[in-house]
Length: 255
Image 1: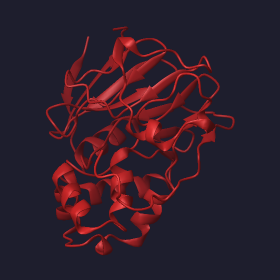
Image 2: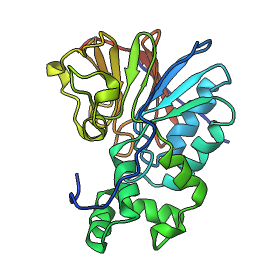
Image 3: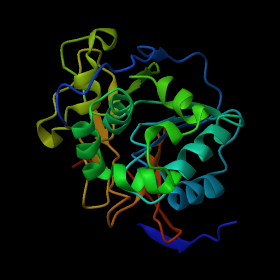
């Protein structure tokens, strides 16, 4: 049964310009601790802090953030600052989401693109930086975003922001598929690798992860009225936090 408790806290225009290509992906080395996947953060720093303070992400853990760190929520700057700091004390794997793709495109795009980007969450991002132009975003934040990965895999699972083509190995997937394609719910086909996919991107307005066995979507709409989900991959147990600092936990159940 889900338990809730309070934790005290201490596609846009096509001609947007060139997109910086990240390292394609990464296969895990030997893992000793927990493998924890975090859904779309969207500037919701309080929810991210709540998960960290409860689960205590440590040096032996692999924390896989599935992308969309910016836009829509109130504190994109704070979320990226927190992830940069988190990388100093745990094995953080930061994937690229479509909102990072849009942000990177905005650096070289024309004014019309920038105005369109503001309407899909960019306005909140700019406010969090107290900035009027993208040039005012700190270099260390651009470096973090530019070095995000398109995918990550272990012996049993792989992790992407959006989705995959069912018959293509991960290195052959395109950025459009990995960052933009939607999770198909019960119609989601198994991947040719036989591994379980963990993804975000497709907001589950129910506030619950959508698990079909061979794939699970953990974008649970934290920037709306939902929760930020952290899934322990081995056990299927997950924890969720919201922007009020509430925490709850439950076990995956097949849809």
